[in-house]
Every structure is written in C-alpha cells, then in structure tokens.
Amino acid sequence: MQGSCLCRSVTFRVSIDALKIYQCFCSLCQKQSGTASNLATIVADSAFEFLSGEEQITTWVKDTGFTSHFCKKCGSPVPNRLRDKPYYWVPVGAFDGDIKGEVSSHIYTASKPDICLSDQVEQFPEFPDGGIDSHIRKISG
Ligand SMILES: [Zn+2]
Ligand SMILES: [Zn+2]
Image 1 (tube, rainbow, N blue to C red):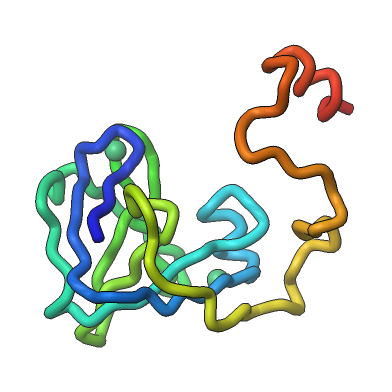
Image 2 (image 1 turned 180 degrees about the vertical axis):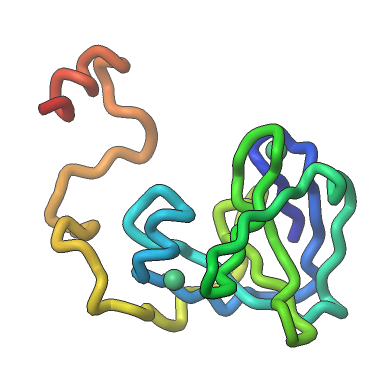
C-alpha cells in the first residue's frame, strides 16, 4: 500500500497485507488532525519506507514530547518513526487507493465529542446533489 501527503511531495510505501487501525479521540489527536479523531496505524520499520519528500517534513514538539510531523508545503500530517521504538506511526488518511485492514480499537473515548458520526444521519456516497451552495446553506449556522 502506498500513500502521500496532500501535495504529493511526501510519498511512502507500507509492505504489509492488512492494517490494524486505531481511532484516537484524545485532545492532541483532535488538534493535530483538525477533526474529532485520528485514524492511524503502526507498522514495523522493516515494513515502511519513504519513497520521496523526506526533506519536506518538518516537526513541532510540545513540551510533553508529543511531536507532530507534517509536510511543510501542504501541512498534512505524515508518517513518522516512533521516538524509541522500531515502528512508524502512519495516518490512515495518507494512504492512496483502497486500504486493506480494519479498525481494531477506539482509544481515549472519554474525550470523544458528543457529536460523533452516527448511522442515523443522512449519508451521501459523494458530494450531495445541489452543489456547494446547497451544502453551505444546509450546514452553516
Ligand atoms: Zn505535502
Ligand atoms: Zn490521540
């Protein structure tokens, strides 16, 4: 499976058959992803390789040691090696094409926002009919 950042400067390959994915609702992941949770996986470093763009990756380190790695051109979170272990953290949204694997755990659910995704809401396989103006009318406060 291969992946890339939004501007495709940073590209990578993961050589495993199926991902075990976790969904984290902690406050750090919410800030870092800009959304309600982070969907990520961890792979052995022997199964991970950057194909391009490592020089485009920059980091921000919180005083606790939490580190965010992102593309300095487009701002997307990108894979990074765990500080003291032989593994890479990989954000699932960075994968291109079909993802093989499944979500195996939800963590920090105590921080999960009340407005979580529900099967009870309207669903659209692609952008809703009516275009952007219709969507804005429906969603804006
Ligand atoms: Zn980028
Ligand atoms: Zn988290």
